[in-house]
Length: 283
Image 1 (cartoon, rainbow, N blue to C red):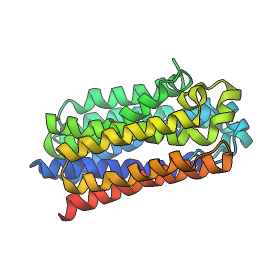
Image 2 (image 1 turned 30 degrees about the vertical axis):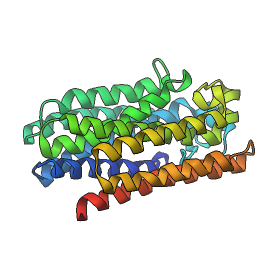
Image 3 (image 1 turned 60 degrees about the vertical axis):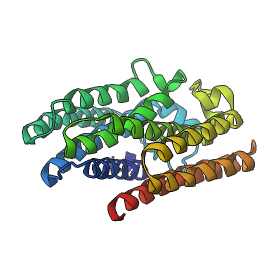
Image 4 (image 1 turned 90 degrees about the horizontal axis):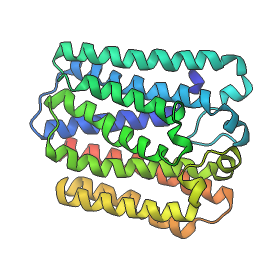
């Protein structure tokens, strides 16, 4: 069952959380390792819940799409007997995330963490079930909010105890990158999603339109970072911007080329996180 976990996505979440912590320290916050660890678990368990719920509800679509570098394991396709266990795991992880948010408050986190944890977990379930945002062209926005705001804000709150205007401005750039991440993840599944009726933005409008959209999003992020985040993060933002420019030039309708563009765009976002963390930690 552990194979359901998307390790690269979990790693990206850890980096996003660390970035939130460092932004908080840069704003004058104080680091308490026990509190930071518990707040990280709040974010990480909520993230892990979506790995299991998405695989559970998308198992039929996964039959149509081959396994990809940053996608799920497709384990439930071949091991149908594990489906109930996957759903149970998703439910337990969501509940644990919310319970831990109360524990974090007892350690000194602001009460705001609790509704944020509840909202983020609820959003994760809206993505794959209930209203199925992922099938209605709204899943990208859900991922953008979850990865670009929900994860970093947990780290920021752990050290500052509040959300201020400066963080909200910078997190706007992170949310735009979260939108780019979602589009990049969807590119390899373009045809399978169309056949399966999962009408996300890539399936609706095609890869070329969405790569142009990703370019506009990266440009917007770069403007925000340049104005409000300082030179280090602004320089880091050039990496996804340049990669998405390349993606627009290199992409064709061939699946192998789309796979390469998708993986490279996602890797560029990892590079952005690592370089941003380095700039805040050492400069």
